[in-house]
View 1 (cartoon, one colour):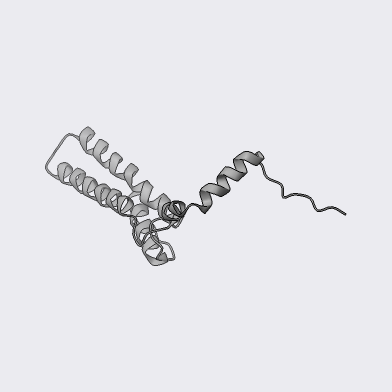
View 2: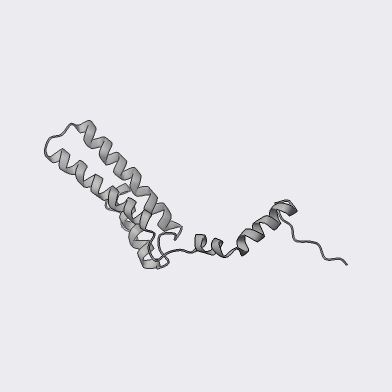
Length: 116
C-alpha cells in the first residue's frame, strides 16, 4: 500500500513558494501580534474624538446634517477596532483585546452588556 501525498488546493510550485515565504524570518515579524496594535488603537481614539465633536456640535446648535454625518463616520470607524479585537489581532493580551472590542462595540450598540 503506497502512501498518498498530502492534498493541497495549490499547485506544487505555489505550495513550494508559500513554504519558502513562511520560512523567511521576516515573515514571523509580519505575523507576530504586538502588545497593542497602535494603528487600531488610534482609530478607536479618533472615533471617540469625532463622536465627542459631533455631540458638542449638536449641543451648540450646529446643523443636524453635519452632526449626523460626523457621528455616522465615528460609528463607522469604531467597527475596525471591534472587528480586529474579535479576531484577537489588537493585542496578544486577551484582556486588552476585550476592552478594545467593548469600546468599539459601545459606539455601535450603546448600552450593550456582555460577559468578558
